[in-house]
Image (tube, helix red, strand yellow):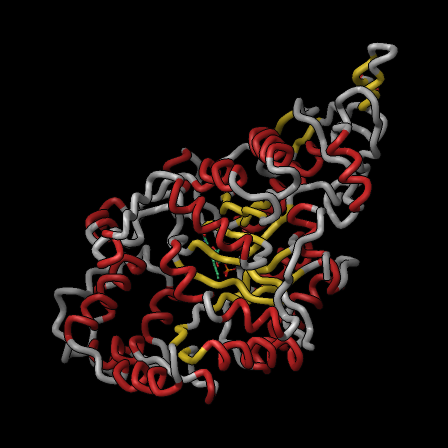
Length: 473
Ligand SMILES: Cc1cc2nc3c(=O)[nH]c(=O)nc-3n(C[C@H](O)[C@H](O)[C@H](O)COP(=O)(O)O)c2cc1C
């Protein structure tokens, strides 16, 4: 038996038309209705997954490059993932849902109120994936901040949201039906927040969360909800941190030094994007845990879950064939990759000569240096390679058995997952893709039973909501 790990699903590219243009769009891919997502999230709960994180972007991007973003539906449209969450909660009992939220779009009061409501409605299964992109500031009438400034604002925002959640003091809820006394107004904190980015008064008009969950306590409170009049439960005093065990959990994806510092201070889950070798995983974990320790937190307070997108084949021979074929992409294959890159980079690569180097002058000022570096991959500069060579390198897959990529049989993928758990202390993985039954079954049908037999994947859930899922082991 091996170390148990946590598993989640990242609905990458958000609540949008992923299947558009692909054959499986004809698999009843009605992306703007809830049914396919509901079916998928039930499958993930059957599979013992802890949570689903839903990507989001608030904007279609630069006004001059709108066509590039939507021409092949890479960059939009995207509906609001927060509003999808209740539909997913409605058909599940244990799995958590964490939509992406950007502090620039919500005032702390509105965020605290909506998220508190969703936490109650979902029976403690709500979380938020906090991101700091500033490119969409203009839609909200706010000045764009620089990279670290956006993190500073996110920290002020999160602290304010958590303070609002706890603006009901521990004894505020009396809930005594015999005396007709529901709540004690003198125990509410009518806080006055005056910060660098936000200025508002409290208290919040939504109920806070009991400092739970002990399994027995939760069961009891479900029979007698804390505000029903005949039982009083313990409401948390602290704001944020591990003491607030009823609060929605915080996920963060930023990988910069400032992003990792944010995770160490605030997050229960770090959505980690890194190359998945033992040394890199260890080093990434060490950085996040160092930051957590600096804020009085420990490895038990945060799960670092690595984004993973394996290609699972029926046999080793098939895996070899897939990898071999990827080394010789057709021009049509390269054009598909170019279209995705064009959307992400907001720069049209699809009309360029494949056999010439790219002129770096084509990238506008709005394209980040990091994104350009991402396009270059293993090449140092655009003078070193033709567009064909850059895109061919992107198309190239590798075998998981040799640790040169993520193509392999379910047994081989399970060996890899087990190795990272046992040898790099890995907490778990977030599989990435669209939230469609075809994608989920393609990736998980064979893998789930193998991981369960090895003791790596849970067979049942506790009763502590999303935070409980993360703390079950
Ligand atoms: C795995 C992963 C998922 C992300 N998901 C989102 C997202 O859904 N929406 C968004 O605006 N940014 C997303 N980001 C971007 C981050 O929020 C952040 O803006 C970016 O990583 C820059 O921060 P950093 O410099 O700290 O890495 C994601 C980043 C990663 C690595």
